[in-house]
Length: 211
Image (cartoon, rainbow, N blue to C red; front, top):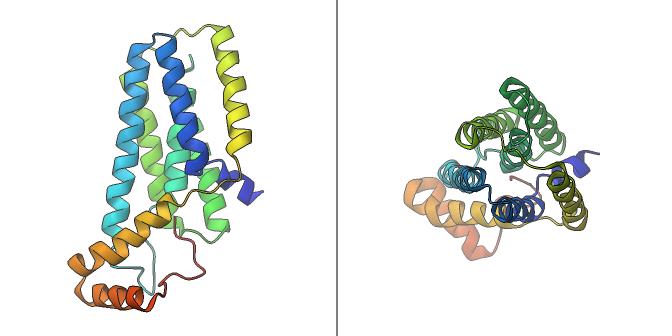
């Protein structure tokens, strides 16, 4: 169950969903929600990237509490929460639902040993903030016809079913770039260790999943 839940927030699932929703909004000529969707999805991804590059550069501390903000928790909360934000339901309900999504995804990441509680709290918190931002930018809620809603839901379910189980290597690539390329620039001692590990062909995080 934990793996099933966490895979719902994998980039190999979320990126196609993001693209599908954006194209659907454009095809329905819902310009403001489409613009808001693009801004929030891009901004959320950029924010997560910056945090990961900065925090992962020096490697995890022995008593690690915060090393890699949970990208799964952040992105999953943002995407599924923003989908709810397009419906004609009250903002407090949308935010509450986003918090629930963050808790479920965060629990799955902690249960799998991929993140600490602090890391999923940060990721989930950022996701909820992005949902609130989208709600503000996209207001008033779009008057999408029920036929369009049904079509989009069917297409999304089919897309998720096809993509679910595929696991992206994007975040591992970010971790590698941050640790081995930025590390020597930002963290002297740890940077030298990182370079030595790369030259030996070893991995500092063998057997660990930090994303």
